[in-house]
Length: 426
Image (cartoon, rainbow, N blue to C red):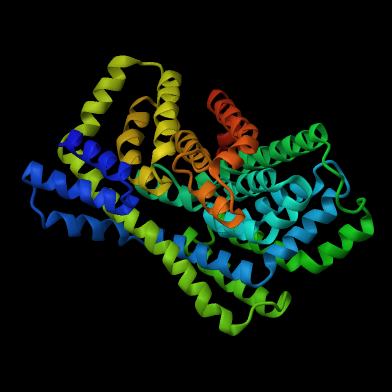
């Protein structure tokens, strides 16, 4: 049955069928082939999405929409500009730093990439060319899935069960997320110098930084309240997401004063559309995962891998290769739902730290959002910029290569990811 599912899924995907429908179609074919009760299909789908932790995803998405409509993203860009100053690749570095700031609120790479592309890609394109501008925006937007709060980490923790906490995964992403941000800013500066791009921005001044901090300190307090409460145990990730929505709403109405009451329905609709796509992927992928379990694929896969190697590092490298390939063809949420139940128990059998393995899993698939042919962040940015994937990839590959280098470093030296959560008791 497993072979039927995999073959049908890839055949459906290759002929252009949308990913959620490809998953559903492959599950339907497998049900027919395996003589499994069709009543199991809606039951498994409902069970997969009827979960309190998953409510954090639409709430964080709504917070991100309110943040964009309320002008909070523009405030973060202005603050980043004050800190970067007049340096090589200055505006590119501002975009990356602004992406990191937005990541602390929204948790959704697609939403952040769309917002940054709409706000910055044309301005960046005037200075650096549209290809490099789009690459910068894609790399910056993708930070949202690593820097907490991350919707990807919420999905992973839900699929992995009680052995992984959302707060622990959030903490695991802090140091690598900061390193990824700093590394991408350095790459942007080096590329700007080598290509002779003109300097942008004003020289750094204490007065300018102080002015922007006075304008933005209440906005900056938002991720401190939300993430601090989640990590400190004051509330769950779902409750924190609800607080983020309320904070973004109040900030847009009364601090930046750019959000209007008439904008709120559209924010809700936009968040609902994105959530529906994610929910459909989770629902259909859960039926495929259930059929894999019925077919004893997890047990057979575990036996095969353990027969191949007993070294945890080799296993991690093997999983990295699997996820690299999966990330090129699967939407990340579908990959979490299909692969976490298969690979997480095997990692536990190897005695791996569940937080470490979970972070590596998420980081790998996050990088997959930037790799063709199915890189959703690429599609969003290319659509806004009006360019082809080939045009953006010529400029994006150094950022992807750095990301995979950091992934290998985190794999070889686990404290880089797990040190902070372990110190805080996770």
